[in-house]
Figure 1 (tube, rainbow, N blue to C red):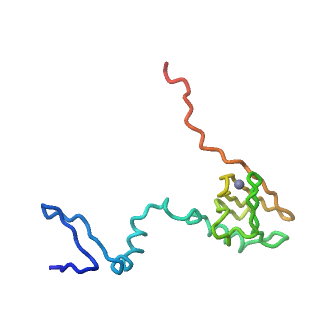
Figure 2 (cartoon, rainbow, N blue to C red):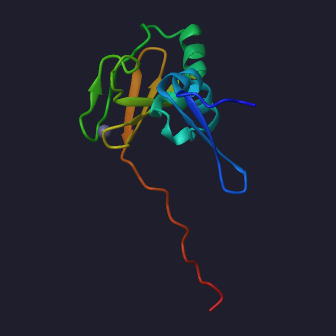
Length: 144
Ligand SMILES: [Zn+2]
C-alpha cells in the first residue's frame, strides 16, 4: 500500500474512485515536463513552436543566391521590424513557410499581416499582405 507523504496525496471519492493526486513542489517538479508535454494543449505553446524550421534550414543549406542569407523582416503594415527574426526575444515575426525555391513567409506578431520574401538570383522581393480573417462561410441561397 502506498503511503501518502507531504510530497503527494492520492485523492479518492467516497466510493473509492481515484480522483487524482495532489503533488508537493518537489514531486511536481519531478513530473512536470512529462505531464505538460503529454497533456498541455498545443495552443498554449509559443507561437514559434510550430515553425517549419527544417524547411528554412534546408533553404539556407542550399542557398545559391548571389547574396548572403537574409535575416531581416519588416512589416509593411504596422512598421514592425527586425534585423534577425530568429533572435528576437520575444519574437516579432514567426516563420510560416519556407521552400527551396526561395519563398519565405512570415506572420507579423504585431498585426498578423503576412510578409512574403521572394528570393531571386540577384534580389529579394518583399510583399506585405494585411491580415484578413478567414472568410466566413457565405449564406448562398439556402433553399428558400
Ligand atoms: Zn505588422
